[in-house]
Image (cartoon, rainbow, N blue to C red; front, side):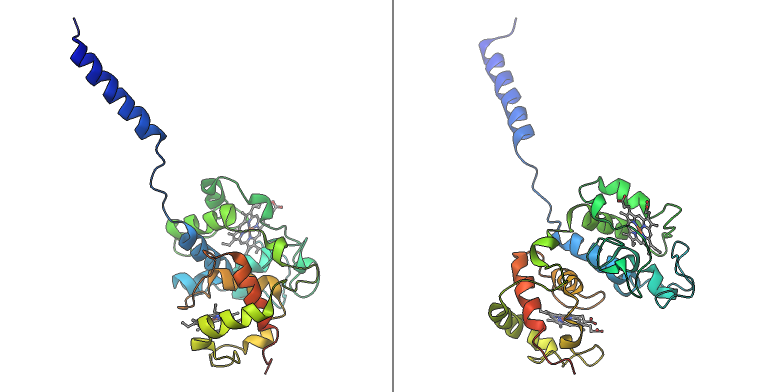
Length: 237
Ligand code: HEC
Ligand code: HEC
């Protein structure tokens, strides 16, 4: 026969188990993985130091195009800075390739997205993108695309407060880039690339592949938008 004491102990143990099941697991920080995934999306071999690919990507349809060769292996070349592919800024012009965006994959199971990267359309090898790389990319595609439309006007210009952006830029960025955006000598003056709003949001939220540049995605994304508005005012040369 079970004693009262053993019953009480049993009930307590049961309650502790039930509580443990209810308590949230310590949430792992994922912003940095999403930022890294986004930098791989930008130019994976600059980020993971894999060999630069050669020849056109097998799925790149524009034969002899200006953005063939290694450029055609960048996710952004087929799917766009705005993640909308043929339905976004790459609908026309030299970057047009007729490929759909990745927006439809937002919210999908990251494991299924990682598998897409090994499929026949993509064919990325483990040497090009390791399992860890594919996992960061998938996390970005699934959960990191954010609400770009909230910050971008239809003409691909960013909406924000340029005066706030100036203070952010001069304190966070000018150490490397200079207040005029011209101090990094191996890159273009920031004022000369600033008119591509979707690209600026992508780079400001996630950083520059292979560089020690900060990623702002853990902050309110309006911070990146405000800076992007300021960048347009910097000298283009
Ligand atoms: C050379 C062009 C090309 C490149 C580069 C490319 N993709 Fe794709 N991607 C495609 C094509 C083609 C499809 C299939 C579209 C369809 O089903 O109509 C696709 C589909 C996808 C999908 C599924 C979209 C959906 O809505 O189901 C995801 C996610 C994706 N690609 C992610 C990536 C990532 C991440 C990279 C970079 C590592 C990448 N792609 C590089 C051509 C490309
Ligand atoms: C630790 C130094 C460092 C800091 C801090 C930094 N950057 Fe950068 N950034 C770089 C380097 C290096 C590059 C690569 C230049 C190149 O090769 O194009 C770069 C590239 C860029 C580019 C892409 C230019 C292009 O090639 O299209 C943009 C945009 C940019 N930075 C904006 C910013 C902004 C905005 C901030 C502040 C939030 C910032 N950076 C902070 C070092 C830095």
